[in-house]
Image 1 (cartoon, rainbow, N blue to C red):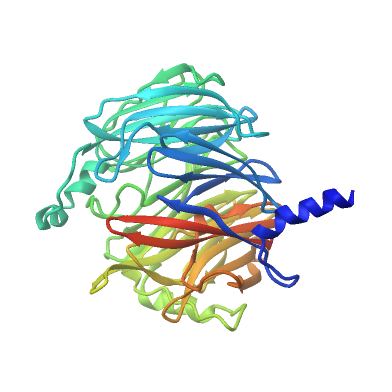
Image 2 (image 1 turned 180 degrees about the vertical axis):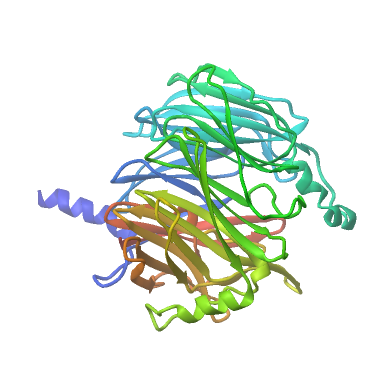
Length: 492
C-alpha cells in the first residue's frame, strides 16, 4: 500500500506546481498546437480536449476533474468538431488543410471508446466538390443522434489576394453569406448515412443554424422582407414551418450578416426557438432584439432595447462592484456593440454583449474588446437582471472568446482582463440567475503562470465541483503561430 502511494506521488508531482493555498497547475500540458484547442463535457468527471497538432494530425485528450490525463489518442486530419454520441466519443475532421485555403470539403468521422481512447471506427462521411468553401454544422443533441449540415458558400477555394477594393465592397463577406447549396445527412452509430435531404433555399443571406435535442433543425435567413426562421422536423418527410420576425431593423443587408444573429433551441420544449440580434433601427441606433418563437402555435414574442450613449452610461453607473480591485465596467461606443452569446437553461435566457474594435499600429493590428454586459431574461422574455463583467483587453490580431457554463441556476463565466502593459488575468464570476446578483467575482491566481499568458476561456473544462482553465502562451515564428497550453485547476 505504501509503495503504491509513493508511486502515485512520484507520477503526480512532476505535473503539479502548487502549495496548499494555491491553484494546482499542470505545466506544459500541451506544446505547439496550431490552434487554441477546443473542448466539450463528456460526463461529470471527464472533459475531452481536441488539439490541432500540425494541420495533418490532431490529438483527442481525456482530462479528469483531478487534472489527470486519462489517455491521448492521435488521429489524421484537421479537427472540425467533437461530441458525445451513443455512449462513445465522436470526432469529425477534414482530410486536408492549408493556411491559404483552409480545410478541404472531405470529412472523416471517428468513433472513440471513452474508457481508453481506442479508435473503434474510422470512415469517410462526406466528400464534396472542392470548388467552393463549405461550412459543416455538427449536432448530436445529448448524444442520441448524429446529424451534419453542410452549407456550400459562394467563397471559392483558392488563394485570395485582398485588395482595398475588395475590403471596401465587403465582397468576401458577401461570398461567405451566399448559399449555393445545403445538404443535411443523418448517420447511425456505424457512421452510415441513413437519411439525407436538401432544404429549399429562400434566396436570402444565411444567418445561423442549430439543432435541438430532438434532432429538429432550425435555420435563420435574411431576405428582402426581413428575417425568416424555418424549422425542419426530425421525422422523415416532415414539412418545414416558417416564422418571420417583426423587428424594426433597416433592410440594408450591411446591418445584419452571418454570425450576428444568435439562435438557440429550448431544452425543455422542442418547438421553441430563441433568438437575438443587434441591428440598426429606423433612427440608426443600435437596437437589441430578443425573441421567442413557438413553431407549434406559431406564436412569437420579441422585446427590444435601444443602446445609445446615455443608456450605456446609466447601466455602467448602476453597477455594484463585487471586487473593488477590478476596474469599473466600460462598454465603449454604442456603435461597436454586438451580441456574442445566447445561453438558455431551466427557464433562464442570457444574452452577452460587448464592443469590439480594431486598430492598426506599428506592431500590426490590435483587437480590443470591452466589458461584457449580461442581460438575463425569464422564459417569457421579461428582463430580470443586467450585470457586468468589468473586464476587457487589447491583443495583437486575436479575439478572445469568453467561456460560460450554467448549472443549478448559476451562470459561471471566464473572461480575460488585461491589467497594465502585459498582465492578463482570468476573471471568474458566478452569477445567481434567480436573484440576478453576483455570488463571486475574482481574478484567478497567476502563480506559476506567465503574466502574459491569456485564458483560453472558450475551451475551459467544466465539472460539477471544479473548473480547469487552459492558459495560452503564444509562440510566434516566421510565418507561423503556435500555442503552448498550461492547465490550472480551480474550485467551481
